Amino acid sequence: MHSRIKELISYIDERRRDLRAAADSVPRDRWSVAPGESRWSVDDVLEHLFVVEKRIAGVLERTIADARQNGLGPETDDSSQIEAMRLNRYLDRNTKIVSRTPLPHAGLSPDAALEALDQSRAALMSAIQSGDGLALGTVSAPHPAFGLLTLYEWIGFVGAHEGRHAAQIREIGKALA
Image 1: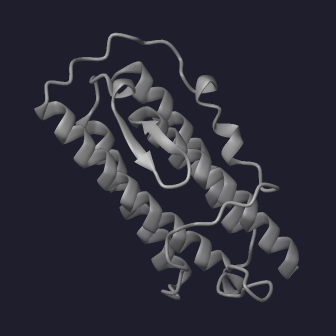
Image 2 (image 1 turned 90 degrees about the horizontal axis):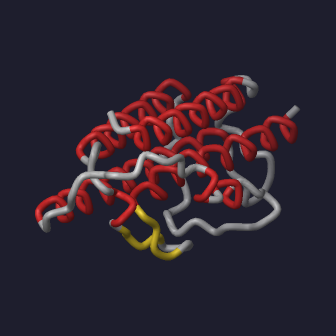
């Protein structure tokens, strides 16, 4: 596995562990409870995350397939890229970001929500692996809120997005306590 992919997978895995810890800090029988009007529950946050991750997996899969078909070459740079991506900008909960995905509504059980997250992660990993060793930093796809992101940035965004929502889940837990 290319070092850039390893670095990004390590980052998104770390963010996933943080997300699970945040969710586990809220009693499961409270996951479906929103802490106020127009606020999301833990279940809502998890549903949003797996819907978005599955969509991103699709973006990566399609974009990598197209780039491969158009002759995308191998990755020749093995330098670290996480800091250059400025992923912390997505973590700032003081900056409101309005999602363009529909509001969550599935009302899944905690176990079903966690299973859906596992499935969306499997789809993402499959998409990432399809581009392993290719120059993914030279290929971009538009993000609806942040403009063009390279495919490496898309992968990093998944982790930062989960980090942002882990903080939101901690806020929900405090509000419900």
